[in-house]
Length: 458
Image (cartoon, rainbow, N blue to C red; front, side, top):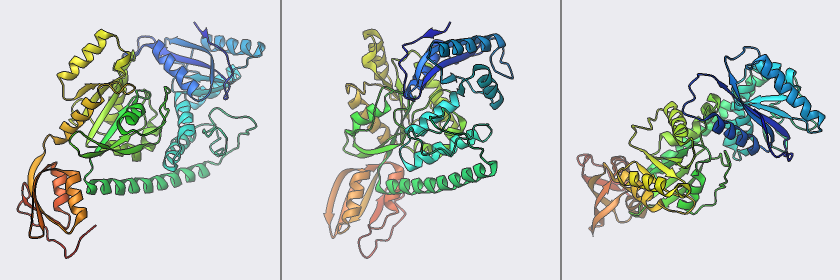
């Protein structure tokens, strides 16, 4: 049964939110009421005022409208009644994929704009993306979605709200857009994103040469990644109790308890039924996760659907070739333990004591963050190897690089050389051995000799 909520009109208008559930279909462990609440939160995050919401039980999907004729008629009556009261419904959000035909038929039956879950997520991303890369990625996903639809609002990029036109806007007109122009624009965006991917690759190589491991934050949207990022780094990344509060990736240096520096990367949040086109469009950004030395899976452990959210994130990581259960780089970070009962909190902390891949934290209060950094430190140190290096004392950059990328156990300076015994990751030692001004004299590659240049190399 639909339940009316407080009706204060938002900047994007009033919305009815519907969450269809097929009877007997697997729900992935997710409570339909919680799924409906998430859909409402998505609507509010784009500025919509939720006038009514409902879980719809379906015996079988209908090809023409998804919903049965009785349900379609009842919702149409609800929309008409709201209009008669002077509270018109501007958009109906169906929290389910809709075909172009289903969308058109429902709009005709209800006399209101209809969007599905994919369109709403794309609208949110279109409004929140701030960097040029983010805008390119979202626009590509939006155009790929619109190409098969009658909606032709992709050219309205100057709207004040900054979205991609799925919700419409005051004074806008729908322009008939030629498919060839649309395809040309998509091809251009893909070329530009190719340049972005190459640039990111160069930046990654530069970080590797500098010897700084990368620690990536991933997790369900609103799990607290940005809050944890701010707590660990002291940064001021926008963090809010809102779905997809931040989209654009951010990186900051963090000093671990051992003294070594790592790069912490905050990435876009995942969500159930994340549009495939969006995952593809954000491939350049998500490659940062693939290349990370440690992956912190931040979970809202206080959320009733935390297990289902974990499965959703694992599925998205799986599409990137990362097995969240078996990949040794992945550490589960149970966030928001401050919201748990005493018994639940004790259970989480006890589990953390028994595992090297699980830790309980509160990003808001800072509890458990020091243990998290120690765990990251141990992960980076596991599998490390000892080696002996010779470094030109005249090459300050090389000396700084050795100290930044390894732990120096001992050092003896003589004859213009610093003889250093270090502990480091095999990849870091290989990078050092390949650099001019540094010679690996003992270790896995002790037989390899690197010629020293005549002068310092930056």
